[in-house]
Length: 247
Image (cartoon, rainbow, N blue to C red; front, top):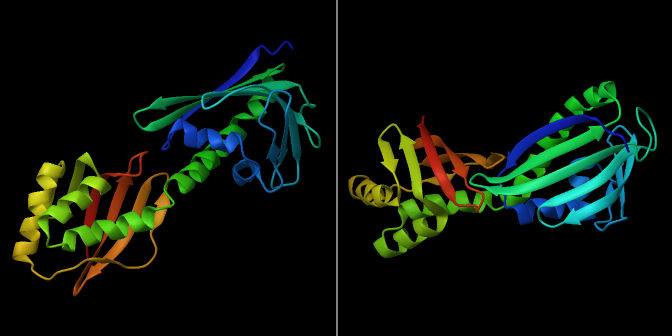
């Protein structure tokens, strides 16, 4: 194929490459980011079938697959426009980075105007992809938030330290109206001081958490006090940063 016109796009997804690549190997996951009924046969020569929510169908063939780093497949339309089956080529490469996985997309076309018609489509579709991967990777976010609040209330110093070490990055940052903390070595004595000066105060989550790509928002209450915490989770599911807002 002569495909001189290229669309390139890169995003970072907060999950490990193994986790991200599952969405090219499993029909249920593949359909989660493309649309119900979409399927993929993850082997050279395997069929790619995408049923978009508007009913338009895209088809292709897997040419290369090398988990968890690379997949190449043809891309065209069984229904609708603008290009027939096999008329363009998609290459997706996954690379581990500090923030999780960098996804590099290359989509090669024969015609520049057809390429330009796909720019917004990939901008949207890769955003959806990042979200469905993050939703799976951080499915335990409510439990993480609950354990965070429980650790603040635990009066056993050794148990509290073990809980925070499991929950949080060693370099966690914590900010609120009364805190400017850097790392677990700063957080642990701060929590002990909070227990000493506010004995018996216990924060509990109020309502469901809200999550988007590793950022988790959770309301809390503690007697007459209440507020909201914003948690940033790392790709490994540990808490990297917390910002608290008091009401």
